[in-house]
Image 1 (cartoon, rainbow, N blue to C red):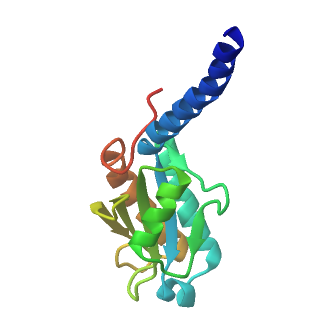
Image 2 (image 1 turned 120 degrees about the vertical axis):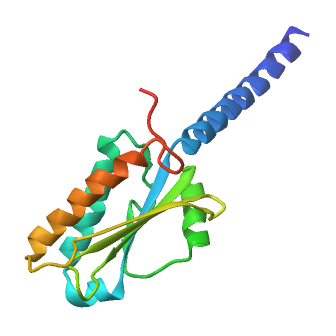
Length: 172
């Protein structure tokens, strides 16, 4: 009788712990965001990969400085590429990585600007939560000063989104 009780405890305890871990991961996922960066064909033609990767890293830095919880895919790391994916596919990857939302960052190089960033936040059903767009503006500046101007604008706009839908922050 005692042996049967002990056996039952040994079988039930791992199950309970597994359920708690799933609940913890689900709760953490709902409070995190998966970031994907896309480089447009215009940016590929007229700018450097370094500008693209730096822009993606700088967006993530603004988010982490604002205490936004960013999920990094253990298999893929941060996705930064030139191949466009559907929002549904990216939202699926976000869910698989354990995130509760997706932030899609598009880095573009329009004809009349040095750089343009479009940030779009989606839920895991691929429903758009919000969108922000910033660019270097139209002036006779260098690429470096255009980049700086674009990120100055982003640093003014993005903090208002932090802590809201799609950009959850840590509780601590």
